[in-house]
Image (tube, rainbow, N blue to C red; front, side, top):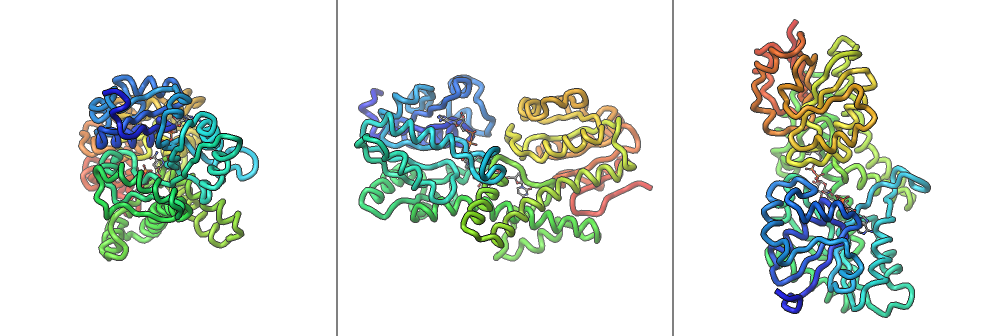
Length: 461
Ligand code: NAD
Ligand code: UGA
């Protein structure tokens, strides 16, 4: 198919966890659009063009293979692609700033600004620029100022179209989204751009799921969505501490509370705390915005969501320490799972990183196992190799260990032969189920001392 047969040319800047999968879905659903994903990282682009994609996401590989080279392309030729684009999605990373003013809470906007400058310099005709990266409220204003600066006469219309997919279920989330949010300016060109973007989604998303708002509401809604989701996890995790103190059972409490349709059942699973590249970063972003607008009590309210998450990870480590007779020095601990959640190899801000480092500080030796995250875990724990081993086989990881700490609820961990594992471990053998995945009574009957989250421990005297 020659380029002239495509109705529109879409370019996505940023070939990461969001850019790659979202564009794959658009290319699959809209064969008459040419979709090109660009990135500054040659390695990432090479991986997207290979049989080994740079990210693991169930269902992604086959969808990429179906359209790659037909209407989905990956390249580092950024400038030429921008020059040719009708619609540009900005999907670059927006990490928390680690330097200067706002370090530790504000968003580092350098990648977004670099992208905007490159678009300004290379665009040759009127272009719709879509913010898909998660950005602070009113970022579109700054983006507009950069894009329209200088003497390029091209008109840029900026839309906000935040992404709500979760890793591990990304394909399902994108193919059957709860909603697609589009924020635009209420001007003739703003409305026309919004309609162009809606046209793309209408290829597979029912019209009633397309929500339109003003730009600022859209930008803020993304931050608030993540803040609300994380807040539910911190709420239930805070209650798990009360459960452990009182012998109430967090799963029973969660079920009883979630049955109220006003509360709902989802996102009430207690665990070792939330991880992932976005919850902490986006809440910190919200906190920074609140402080910027002098809304200190509001900032404090949201900051607590993060404090409870940190508290939950600390509690987990302290429980291991106190149960193993207050010393971990020289003891071997098998960590089952390192990814921040199952069905992804992503370990960004995974509770496993923090927990591993804390256990290492206590001079434990760690055997880390995970079905997909070992390469990332190795990067995260660089410098700790003297007492950290990465072992693919969970049975081998548990051999000779004093304790197992389950940190990611990979379903394969539920069906392991725990009798065999128990037999190979030091005694007394301990298991800390940080995700309440396992059959605790069965483990206890095998001989383990069992420590779920938010439930009474099952200890042999
Ligand atoms: P990522 O780090 O996986 O990918 C970002 C990519 O952008 C990288 O490959 C990087 O090389 C590239 N990049 C950076 N600067 C560039 C530039 N100037 N030109 C070209 N490429 C450039 O990040 P991600 O997880 O895909 O997240 C992207 C955005 O989406 C973030 O704002 C994030 O908050 C948001 N988001 C992420 C998720 C998720 O599940 N990961 C979900 C919803 C929203
Ligand atoms: C989250 C949101 O769910 C997405 O809507 C959003 O688009 C995305 O962040 C983003 O902006 O990046 P994600 O981080 O991929 O998606 O995964 P989640 O399923 O939300 O899980 C996040 C963390 O919360 C995981 O560590 C998970 O184990 C934990 N979690 C989740 C719990 O501890 N309990 C729960 O009940 C649910």
